[in-house]
Structure formats: structure tokens, C-alpha cells
Image (cartoon, rainbow, N blue to C red; front, side, top):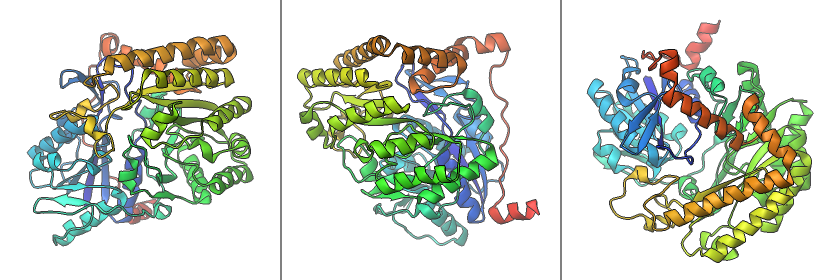
Length: 510
């Protein structure tokens, strides 16, 4: 079959500094490889990657970066058999609905399948908009099964699949990711992403690849969807296969910088050590980072030394709060003393560390925030490199979803929940945290501070913060000046090309 995979444009609040920084969609690269292995042709319409400098007004207070729905659908090859749309988060909800409707206008008889993180927690609106199927959970397993069903003409139910005329409960299950093929990034506009010089993690060399080596989490933080997404499982590739994958991308794409997007890379101490030692044994000169973070209690002095020696230069930690009371409310186990030790050790080694905090959790009081302020000041003195202060956003199917008022639009579930009663108070607290952090870092670690400023101009980023400043400058140019100075108002729209199945590719290369 000929399957077109679609990534929505990136949606952010207008004039908000708290939006996400998009990177290469590795999920589509992995899914492409799986579908090729099953014998399908694949085309990818990466709505953001095909037009990252295009801004369009969206739903009054939002903006979309990339192609708009009509352009997306016009980029799908005319002989498509199935359209698959990936909807990653709540901000992409309405855009996903629009792409469904546009797809049905042009391809009325072609099945439209919706999948992605968000669809695991939201089904009916996509079916109501005209989608034929909604796939929950791991698309690498369920989507190929659905395609087999469509090819055979037999209509049957499988767990985690919803469609017109039937529905089934999603049963979380382990995903044998060890056997997944390496990602095929060929249909993605890699050069465009590399020329942007920014991503979810710090882009050090310009050329990078995003990959995952594990999935899931055994913990049950009250604000997190991950336990529901993966059913409480943690699934990991073997350390040798991870290094094999890095070698594969290095040989194929010429990259030596890797962004490992795992939610919990280091849960196995033995695997972490073996991974670093395998890189050293093979004498690889790679750099890598963990922009989504690691669990702080899973690394000690020896692990950190090995990670640094093998190329790790950045990771995030998530202590969330310095108040034991708030951490208990969050159901978040954190060893705050160990956070301090890890920050101090990384400062001496040369690994850049970011700490994430969540403010505004139900039950948090001013005294609790003061504990967090004091804790952050201690971390800065110990050498903490950057900080991110989030405001609690209650996500669907989490323990705090009751905070959402009735009638709330999915797009309003974002990094700036203006509808929350304490929004202004928590926003002031976030700003105060950032002001304190910048001033204290400049005072206690002036060389680091100057190095961060320098990286903005050299575009060899060590931190997300430096990269974000650069992105703001690029965004200002894109919004207000690019068209005037270049005369270019938008991208040329044409159909994307089919990538043949695995066996056909082998025939073409012989």
C-alpha cells in the first residue's frame, strides 16, 4: 500500500516565551522504517519541516508554524491509499481535525488514520471530524496491523484501535523496541532542520539526529501522562544496539551529535554504564545529550564520569519542587540532596545540567515556593547551568485533570494556562525565578555566563537557553522582516515523493 504520513505544523501561543522548540520528528522516521519493512511505500509530509519560517495566525491567540491544512493535503501524492496523521499534543488538536477534513475533501474514499501521543487520551473528536480510525499507543505495532486489515478487506477489532462501527479498550502492553528497525530519516528535510540550528536539545554542531533508546516510566507522577501511555512499563533497547544505531546514522548521514529523547534513559544503572563503556571501547568521537531528562537517583559519580568520557555534554533533571509536602502531593519521589551532588559533580566534569520545576500544584503555598527559591539558589552556586520553571498544566487522564473547567478547548491546555485562577501569581513567580537565576549565575559563574552569550553568536549551543535566545531572534526576522528583504512570502507546494518498501530499495541498489 501507499501510505502518506503527516506531521502537523507546530502550534504556539502568540507572543509567548514558553512555547516548545521543535526538532526532527524521529517518530515518523521509525514508523517509516517499520512500514517499509512491511512492504509499503511511504511518503512523509512534515508540515513544519517543509516551511519552518512560515507563521500563520491560528484560532485568534495562537500561531501555526509551517504549512496550513490545504497545503498539507495538496502535498500528499494523488495515488495515496492511506493517510496517517500524527497528533502529538493538545495544541495540535484542532489542526489535526482540520487536516482530517481537508483530506476527506480531496481523498473522499481514502481511509484517514489518526495516531500519536494525544490520540491515546482523546478519540471521539477525531472520529466525529471524519477520521476512519484512531490508533492509540505504539503506532509501530498497531498501524501495520491496521494496514493488513485494510488490505485483506476483513473488519476486525484489535486493542487500542477505534473506528466507525467498533471500538475497543486500549490494553497497554510491552513494546519489543529491541526489534524495531533503525529510523529512516530520508523522507524528512534534514538539511532544513540542520540549517535552523535549534531543536529540543542543544545543537552543538549543526548536524544532529534525534533517537530514542527506551520508552515508558515505572513511576506515577500525578501530572504526567506517561504512565497511562505505556501502562507503567519501561522498555529499553540493549546498549549494543543503541551504539549500533548511532554508528548507522553516523555512517549514513554524517552526524556525530545525537539527541536521545528518552523520558528515562538511565533507569538501569548497568545499561547506562555499559552504553558509555561501549562507546569508549569502539573509540567513538560522538557527543550526545538527554534533553527530556534522566532520573537523578539513577546516576552517581562513576556513571557521570563514564557519561562525560563517552561524549555526554548535557542532560535535564526534574526535581519539580523543593517542598517535601508538594512532592508528596505530586507523588514524585526525589532525593533533593542527591540533586545537589549531581549538579556539583557535573559542574566539575563539564556536563551541562538543566533543572525543571513545576509551580502551581494544588496545595502549594507561598512557603513551599520559597523553599524552591532557596534550593535553586544553592544549585546555582554549585554550578547549575540553566533552569526551566513550568506552571502546572493539567493534562487529560492525569490525576489533576479535574482542575480543567468544563468547555475548555484542547488548545488551552498548554504551557501558559491563562484560565487558571492563579495564573498571574505563578507567572510572577516564574519570572522571579528566572531573574534570580540569571543574576546569580552571572555573579558566581561569570565565565559560564559569558560562554553562554558567546554561543548565541557562534551557534554552537551548550544550553537550551542560548538556543532559545537565538530562536527568538530568528523568529522576529521570520515574522517581520524575511518577506520584505528576500521577497519570499511562502514555500513552493508540490507533492512529496514515495519512498519504496525495503525489498524494492534493495533491488534498486543492486
